[in-house]
Length: 460
Image (cartoon, rainbow, N blue to C red; front, side, top):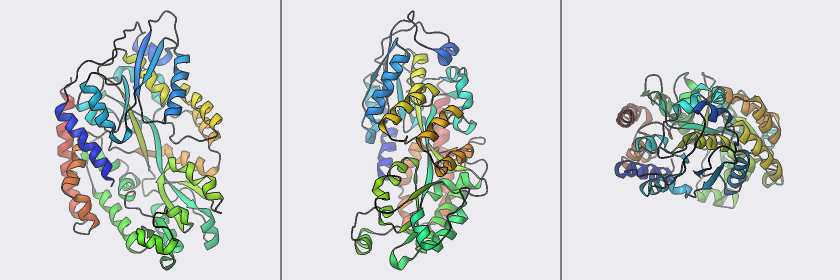
């Protein structure tokens, strides 16, 4: 659990208490079409009045600038001004802009629920519903950003949790690579076969930040990340506790590696080395964006071939994916055009065709993936990332559950509370047992959730 996340959410709580929104800096007006027309086919039109929008995302500057130019060419009556915010203090940056009346018309958010509680986000229910393309977004993805039947934001892209398998080490150990539809049980069995603790050869990387996250979706049909059940609007940390216990068991048996700096120095001659770089790790638990590094010459030149695999699953067959979220500002005076911009820059088919041009020119592959069930766009992604291992990851996403910490109401306050109570420290030191604290965590998060939902519901 990273402390930077703690401070980010803490700032969000302060923002929720102090914020009093003033008018947005966007002074332009528009004679845009109806919500249905603009969302579906709002192409350039000489008869439209000029519109200027502000936009903030944490995507790399180079691709942002490229995509903005493409958008402005496609919709030549719209001008886009990019707003720069420090990613490490993103929500505080949004708060600062909101208090001065400069909240971007379109912005990404690490805490969409708090942004909605604060009154920063516009209700785009009708615009979203009237866009035929959103019908291609899986139902579970569409849950994000919906609060009591109203949409104040949305999932815009995904980067699944994945595993990287050291094919070279498997061949050296004469152990067969698993099937792509592998299970959590398979990981434990493989880790046992591949580990030689005395030589600091480990079967799997530290699972403590992954197993508690993926167990609710891997082992149930209805629960999301953190045990959230959107149908009952309750939380159940039982599977979280099971994942934590299994992760600790792998670490205690030395089948999972989490060596100290001193141990790395003794074993590998470098106290700061990343475990995959040693060549003595079989399975690396990670995020999709790491594929660019794992597939690079940094590893192949050292004689290591890494394969990307879907995250293993349990009885439900579901895998965990991480989503980014975007919103239109409540103070935006051109919400239909703002939605067009958000769509183009993130999840829309036109934007992904532009991304193909960018990635092809740069000879690189995307760090994040589409969310829509659009064969044409997925063919673009597959062409940029050839290989049966990549294809297996994409196939697994047909049964994916999005993470929820960035859009569940009350999660920011809950997260800050867990650090104040030293919940994670006590677990790490063995002073608390996951099964014992699970009921308390479920009840506490539910309380924060209900409080935030009460505020959201008052928005009308």
